[in-house]
Length: 615
Image 1 (cartoon, rainbow, N blue to C red):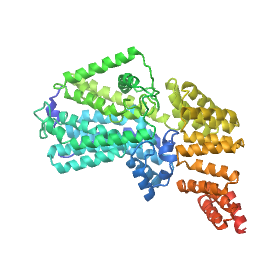
Image 2 (image 1 turned 135 degrees about the vertical axis):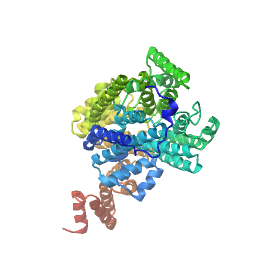
Image 3 (image 1 turned 60 degrees about the vertical axis):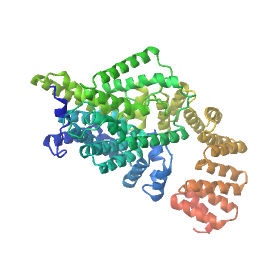
Image 4 (image 1 turned 30 degrees about the horizontal axis):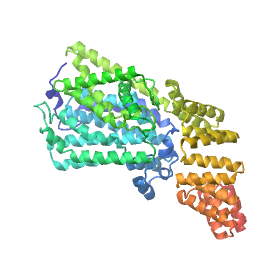
């Protein structure tokens, strides 16, 4: 079944997806993907970043507003700058409110469009119908891609990939005509992709790979259907894109570091990062080949066995040597392998973002490189005889059936938080993050004792896990064990003295014990670390009011309202403070606002009756 590279790779159709076989592939892609992923329409939000992006984000929950648009363009919330992602979530809220099914289905729709467009891109570049279909089918159905599709917080991943594929399409059109005006679309989609997720910064490198294979603009093919250019010219025309990538990378690093997402060298040394790099690449390859026991979180090992590191390094070196050796005879292998290596580089751990070792979502675009190798490499194993083609076709059907079944099962684990984190704990060892998040989910359901067990396990596995200490302390405080709660808040603050949330929570417990002056110290520390902590302003106001410092309380309530103007409790307490100062008109105004925001607020209703004399 060997074919001349040029004859198959560089054949361009005058129209895309007008051929009945191409249309059939697209419809089959859509149908199978819907059957596998359609269940997300009944899924819930997840207690893992969905709060940051949707459920607890006041700007997103407000839908599409002018204030929200301005916020999306200026905020560093979530330790990233990605306004397109924020606007996407706001649009979802505008359309579906806080019903999670609508949000999930929009994510699925983006994934479906990307799968079809990816097929169109490879058809346009190569003219190889079934090989292009294999690449698109693997992209659409591989279990490693479930995380990006089934997790609302990963909308950024889907949007980035969507614009990435549009860049590829636009670049193909430019390569065909060599009209500089066509590059404007490349720049536009590239910038939009960055505004969705910064992982797109490797795309200029991918465009150079496309010039080499399959477009054949540079390199070793003399039969390319697009105009040829020298390597120097190909690099020169992409200099603006490379410069944009440098600027974008700098912006992203600065924002993530200021947001605490980038681990310092004291947390993970350069040596630890270096030895984990080949292991991470190998784990991605192995999970691509055998996609089972997938987890929402994989903890980072700081001291992997030397033999494991050496083995991974040997395999990677061998594959790199093959890529060099086959650069002329099998350019698809070289291009696919470099695609995989290069596009994973920003998230492979050299710059450690978070404490995870690897993440399924990071493979969304990089795996296309391995899919290229599979789609072009497997047919080379056959000799072109009819029975061999039939075996190959049958094997492909079995493969996709297995992938669809595995993905369908993996999507099911994302139905709700408890199921997701229980699965993560079951398929991994010493995985502290799912224990902590499972504790949060159980606590929200009122299963406090079970939640405490999982928080305790999280801090046992990772004693310096500040968030788990804070969550454990919250649960203990709810149980009435205030002394134990104080111990864990104190431990969280030992780990991070600027942990605003822990300062605020510790102050709340101290105030319950009547230690109001000590509580005020921690409220103020919380605000020093995070001046935008509206809850800390509000709680400090309560403490000041209790100590008879009414004017100080008013100042804190006003600041809390400035940060969160739609909180009825803040308005209600401010009204009480104004009433205590004899400012009846101001008190009535804020009580009316509290009732507008929360019409069923009994306290506000009674207080308003007392002040106005209304019945």
